Image (cartoon, rainbow, N blue to C red; front, side, top):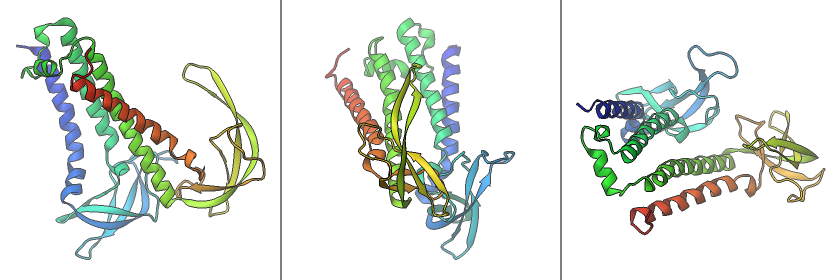
Amino acid sequence: MNWIGWLLSLIIMLLLFVAGAILWNPLRLLISGKKVEGVVIGLAKSPGSAGQDSLKAPIFEFTTLNGEKTKVSGRDFSNSTSVYIGKTVPVAYEQSNPKNAQIMLFKEFPIGIVATLFGFAVFILLIWISGILISGDPRLDDPFHLLPMLIANLQLNPYRFPVYFLLSIVIPVSGTGTYLLTASALDLRANGIKTVGEVLRFERIISKTNDGRATSGIFPMVTYKDASGNSHIIKRSMAKPLTRLKPGDLVSVIYPAEHPDQGVVNTWDEFWPPPIFFGFVMIAFLWLLYLMLTGKIQL
């Protein structure tokens, strides 16, 4: 018996089953649940955690279509929730059990753990295919003989496979980055609180690159007050000589209501360069994948 093939197949199927089981209920509510609006009324701490850095999930309240008021705690605990107390949120619930409810926001779905499980399954699969291509050992075949068919259809070889491996990582990462950064920017622009800040001074900021080198720049430091009257200081992303700001200049600042200390200067270059970059990378690599699949690029 091909024990290696059976073992790897069972591990991959188990990972995919667990990921599907975690996503099953939220997706079922998304598709067939009753849709209403709810209000976030508090934050629940993860069981066994304590302190300001504990994991939290939103507690939200909504009224069912039958007029029944229901309070539910979210199931996805994180360091920073995507909603704040008092925010109106879309909710989907099970008609026969209103306590089974889900906030219909991307960040409130258990995407992190599902992506980890799915990514681990894909990683095992790619390493498995790599082993088949390099060794040619028939004992590495899967019990259903699907991998040899995949290798033949994609015309995989030791040169093409690393490119597919790279694309399988870069495309989802850049696509996810594009979505999250765009959604975050749109949410802040739509729901953030605007105020007026003042350039306080210029300050040299020193940081280290991934290779250990130190880089520095001279950035405007902007001070502003939130709705409670508390003062905060933030850094303008554009450094000298690109910025024309000078001490005493007034600038528009926008900050999320739940994190008034995380304001940004309300200009396009503070929001859009990162999602544009990730979007460009995603489109470029999707085009490369298309050219390889259609045979217009041969390796």
